[in-house]
Image (cartoon, rainbow, N blue to C red):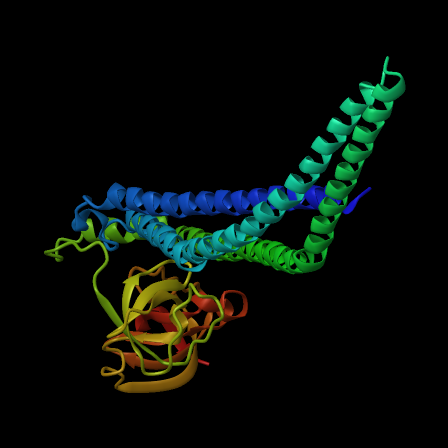
Length: 389
């Protein structure tokens, strides 16, 4: 096979690859742009879902379940908005910038392809035309004799020489193209195709990273909601409210009164749902649960989370700690906790009393400390204790 047809075959393949490669990149870029738009639209839909709900209706002190659900919806809306922004900044915008430069490189390569293809194909078309003319002259020999045949043979020789000249000229054009253009085309096309595929891969890989982060945040939010529901004790909450309803000494019934506590020990945790603090931190208790894990916020910050109640002391306890004890007592009468911060006692339990203030003790139920440490420390009436051991 001569060089000309080979060059034209190679150029045709390059042209098809250029078109297909650019079209694929543009296509996936449009898909990811639409993905970012969908994330933003869904974020707005979630915000619209809860924007008109009155604040008092989702007060966590009045309805902690509804508040937890609304909080998760707002969190999910924020995650979708963040995903949309990240997709635009790290995927869509860089992809659009690359498409511009990629099309410029494609146009530059195609310009050379068109120029060389036109030159090579034109030269071989001239040679092919000369060949057809030669064949036509040969057919005219049929039926000729003598001087007419001799004259026609001279014409055939002339056409044969013209065909040979044009064929040689076509081969020279092909050889020149092969020597001057093919090496550069090989380099430019190779760089284009490799760069395009690398950017294509990175585009999708970056999208996968962002979606993985998004999904992790979604799972974390759902786990937080599940944790809140798991820690919520409906029976305890109902019992405390019912007790207040029937206590006529209480003028205003508050679902969960505002409680303030102080950390008596550092609390560290690797769980992002937990509220970490150091000794001395002032904590606004927003929710009490019978599980022993409460919800709160460090005063003066936006740090919220759950924590074991055994690591804190209710405000006022420190000031009223007039009678330090530091001894073990025997429980003489059962006590079922009736307010936040209290612990349960059973007859026969041993309790370590830290101090007594106004007829109430702060201490640890040693029985509970063995199997339920989170609920072992708190407050209880002095009258329920029998004697010192």
